[in-house]
Structures are given as C-alpha cells and as structure tokens.
Amino acid sequence: MSEDIEDLKDVAESAEPDDATDAGNAAEEEEEPVSLDEVAAAGEEFVRGLLEAAGLPAEVTSQVDAETAHIEVTGEDLGVMIGRRGQTLDSLQELTRTAVQRKLRSRIRLLVDVEGYRARRRSSLADYARSIAERAKERGTEIELEPMSAYERKIVHDAVSEIDGASSFSEGEEPNRKVVVRGE
Image (cartoon, rainbow, N blue to C red; front, side):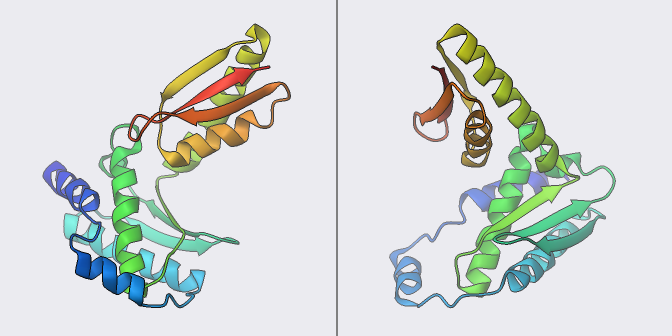
C-alpha cells in the first residue's frame, strides 16, 4: 500500500504539462467560470476513485464556502494518506487539484483534508506563530521558522498580524522558503 502512496506522490510531482502543446492549448482556451459545487463534485469523485483504486475504505464528502471547495476524507487507518508532516496529503491535494482543473478546464480553489489534519495543523500552527510573535516582540529580535509550504506560511503570517508590535515576512527559495517573525 505504501508503494501506492509513493506512486501518488510521483504523479503529483509530475502533474505539470510536459510539453509546449499542452501549455499552448491551455493558454488559447478561454477559461469559463465553473461553480464551486462543480469543483466540489469533481474533486469528491476523483478522490473517491483514487481511494478505491488504492484499496482504502473511506468516506469522502465535499462542501463549499465563499471561495473554496473542500473535500474531506474520513475513515480508519488513513494516516498513510496524511504522511509525515502532511506531505502525502499535500501530494493528494495537488493531484486532485490538477485533475479537477484539467477536467473542468478552469482555475479552481480546492482544499483536501484527511481526518481533519489540516484543521488541527492550522490551529496548532496559528497558536505557535502567535507565541513566537510574542517572544520576538519581548526580545525585540527576529525569529526564523523552519521551511513551510505556502499554505502554512499564510497561516503564520495571518496569526502574526494579530499581534501588535510583531510582523513577519518570507525569505528563501522553495522548497526551503521560511517565515521570519520580527518583534518591533
């Protein structure tokens, strides 16, 4: 089963158009707006099929908010779909986003979560960022955090912005881009 997950990661990493024809066709086609309900339905269908192909029993549901379609996967023993520090989940999301975007031929906003991992991570990361901001403010110094995904960096920036006397910025190149929190 873990080989299946590694294969998913490889597919997600190579999901970009691999020739100029694909890129040219995408640029020539006008993107028609699609509803978030369509995005959610397509994402739910894709993730359900992927889990069935991997032999992982799970329930897949979707919902939409003002600007994003959310796909939630629940079940037992789904840690393998999250992976170390959410890396497999990130790959699953990118694979799903790419597949749905190609199917609907439109840019989309889609978030995939497994067993509430992203919600728990968002909460703990925001708490951590606020405590680091307070520490940087007390010391009047900068504190450099570990490299994070763009999604996680945004959570940190948003949390730090809540603290008067602290600010944050990102530096470095992907995949080692990190947030620096500054006390003022």
